[in-house]
Length: 469
Image 1 (tube, rainbow, N blue to C red):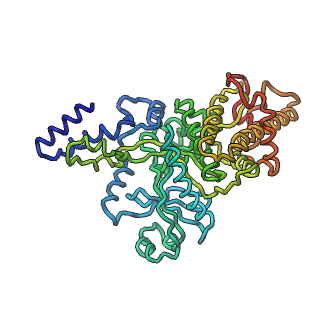
Image 2: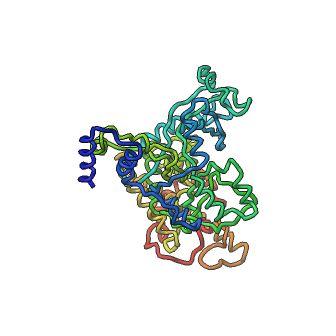
Image 3: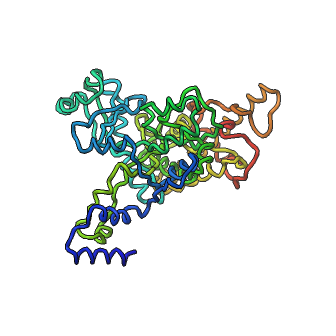
């Protein structure tokens, strides 16, 4: 490979000519895609195989979707940089500025504390996660942070007011500008609809413009049989363990990546990670050549051609930091972090008994969390064993929920059934454990770990994660 590249360089130099556009793209592509795999969908015939291949991390696909074309056209014309709503959150509505690769979170109320908190925490988390991931074998992306635009910024609003889609939105409001996580391309959206959307809704869903903004929430802490609902949306489509397994996605790798992120947020950023999200989304393939790669290219190779929104790679993204709060480096901080874990959507694997089918996934998450904590926690934090006490607190809370569900099952049926409570017998997902108990639960977890704390992870007959928790 190196010899061929050197030969190409020599030949190009002798010819004293710049490579044509086609040649330049082909040459540069070999260097940029050394860690990526292009998916050839011409060989794929069913939607399950399509999703399984394309949703694998570092897969690349070519897309001629209307969104990609609009993005490229808008990028060439400043007049086309209009704002379009792509989602709503608790403290802000999210708008893309078409063709720029930027999004703006628009606060619902002036000078909103949550949006400013999002900005501060986002800056901190971006810096810490970027450094930690660079030093690890894992792949995780955090959107770049650009700026906070105040409602009183007359210069910005004068330039951009007319680009908002309604008179109401033209009224100045505080904005947070960040990198956009691009949605999953058309072929993925069509496959999701074909596999999971009720047949009578498919046409309506396919025509709904909002469903172009498709991201997948990765729920590794929930396993439920998929039941079609009365409505269906591709915005924030929820993929729990039943779907992840069905598509054969890399759940253990994702679990370890989430563990790295959570450890960094706890012990480097010193945040509780409250209400953060992990989603599968895409991004244009961007060139990452260093001087060694570039020196092997023919002179004047046009590497700009690789930066196209028509070629996308899938990534796991971490986002939404408006509800993150500080934690102290003591047992009070551990209790706060344990509460935040259980209040969040079920992205992380949950503690389960060692004979549960998903025990190995929990062990992968637990062990990676402790390993990363050993790298990023302070000496005092490690001496006080706070990362281990956080894990112990999770196990103690899981055991408490399991026992409460078992007791309810006994009260409702008169006797326990099998090795665990009936389907749906656990407390509601994300319930808030009582404050003041998490700290003591955390300290008890290590002494009473039993079959919850360690084990071989052998398959057993207990119910699903949701049945237990």
